[in-house]
Image (cartoon, rainbow, N blue to C red; front, side, top):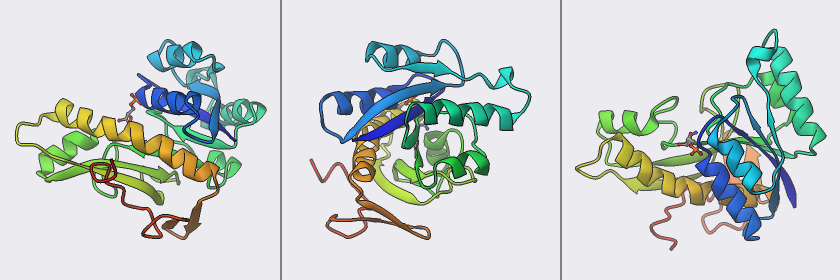
Length: 216
Ligand code: GRF
């Protein structure tokens, strides 16, 4: 069972989905620690309610990013974390942090990357006028939402959508996709060859496109 550290900054609905999947035994993982860069966020309450250890690592308490990240790494390693999951974590991580967990830092983004990286993915998708939106779980590299894609899920854009409506439809799929990606990594079924991620045992040999509307 893989030990997961979840990094949060906010509401924590993806964290909740991961906690629920672990508790139900649906994934081969346990959340060892939840780390927030902000005190008082709802995600910390969710972790405590699930009996999971929490830590706030406030960047303002450190002289620079290097010192902040050194502490992040120390906290995660001392909890035995093998896989770092960013779940609404609003800080960019440096190559130095990523080197501490090679190919073991993943993120969920509310758009079909490489379209609409950065903030407000659903809003960007609406403004562009796309007909299909979705979410992506990807490995984190030094760019913003640029790392190799692990899984994606698509949702339709509907005529009356505003940003909150589309974001909510995408979020439902995020909550399915993120635990699934964690489980695949935990079971050693995810391989990376350059930018291409292979999912062993997946019907199409890549598993890169998952359409939850089709897989029940
Ligand atoms: C999600 O939309 C996720 O895709 C993005 O940040 C949001 C976090 O939401 N990275 P929550 O805190 O998990 O509810």
